[in-house]
Image 1: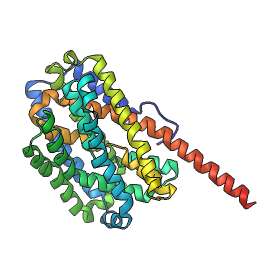
Image 2 (image 1 turned 30 degrees about the vertical axis):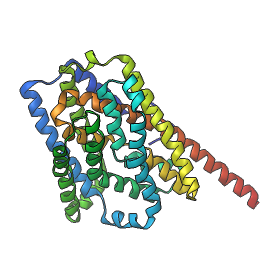
Image 3 (image 1 turned 90 degrees about the vertical axis):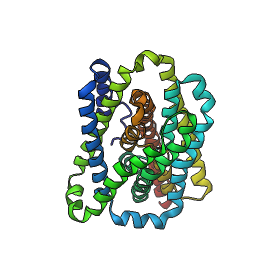
Image 4 (image 1 turned 135 degrees about the horizontal axis):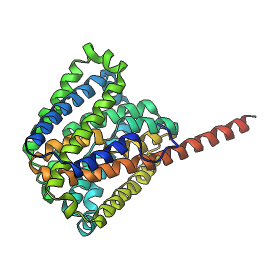
Amino acid sequence: MSSRRVGPDNFTLALLATVALASLLPCRGDAARVFDAITDGAIALLFFLHGAKLPRAAIVQGLTHWRLHLTVLGSTFVLFPLLGLALQPLGHALLTPQLYLGVLFVCTLPSTVQSSIAFTSIAGGNVSAAVVSASMSNLIGIVLTPLLVGLLLAGHGGGASWHGVLDIMLQLLLPFALGHAARRWIGGFVDRHRALLGYTDQGTILLVVYTAFSAAVVAGLWRDTPVSALLATLAMCALLLALVMPTLTWTARRLGFPRADEIAIVFCGSKKSMASGIPMAKILFAGQLGGLGALVLPLMIFHQLQLMVCAVVARRYAMQGHHRVVEDSREAD
């Protein structure tokens, strides 16, 4: 991932094309049920492969750098939800109810893996810590995210039930555990074909987005969602990032973390995973597919925004690191 690229990538363009296709040609009736069944299978395969990808050593190593990982997890599963709740007055004033619930849902999600590691590497941070921290966040998120959804969104009219929490355990955690158990046999194949997992991630997201937006369009998503609410969603996502990233930087420095660890904390603790979030939304909100499109729309906006902002921040960290190296070499001379 280039640190210079801050515009939409190919996958973002594919997402936009999928939303456009669902808006113009939504699937209905029997076709929608077929797509729904295919999507369920793709989600199970996705988490099976994620389980097979995660080495046991990464889990063990995570225990040795616990202060860093607790800081990241605190941001992901405590700071973000608290900020989401604090923004409730703005959300109710500027957003539709479903869009605000979507913002709250974003706040409950685990961190990304690939982009957290990539930006940490670009910035000159602790890459091994980023690998472990992001992986731990996703593993814990399989359990913790549905619990947070049950606590936060059910209290705000979201309709996510504890039955949905059980469903996500069975449909996501079970395939993940089976995949991890099968790593001894298929781990080498998965490690050699990392692109396969990437295509599974992206294909599954596109399938869920198409089915979700098809149901939402049929239910009147674009008719009932004003442009002003979409712009306000973008502003609220930007506000979340603007609050979280400086808070993480300040916290890392106050706790005495070295610069490389600070970088890993900032990038792992400020991300939200669309690869995990959209499949989770599909399961947790299965009873309200008509509103699922609006619920995942803030996540799609936040995803692109976090990539663009973190690309700029990573480049700035890298330049600061280069300047420090130059100054140190001059002092040595």
